[in-house]
Length: 67
Image 1 (cartoon, rainbow, N blue to C red):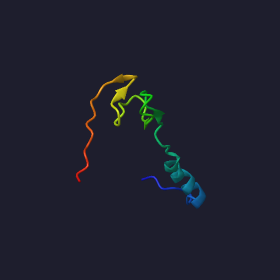
Image 2: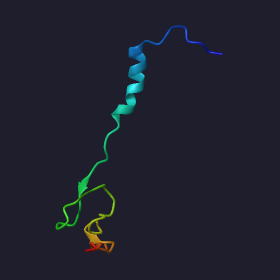
Image 3: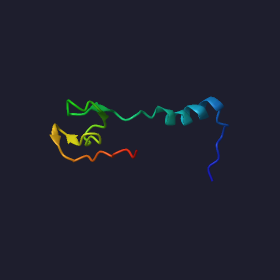
Image 4: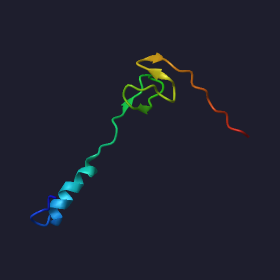
């Protein structure tokens, strides 16, 4: 069974573990509908207006608030 010859230093251990903090947030682009102006993920249908690539793809139902 392999056994380390020397103790791993705290700085070397922490440098190895620090790679998880390099995650980035997803890229966002403006909706192709000029009236919407919502920030969406690229290559996805806008959830607010239903546009994709400048064309209406989905009919979005507006929820009515109860009085």
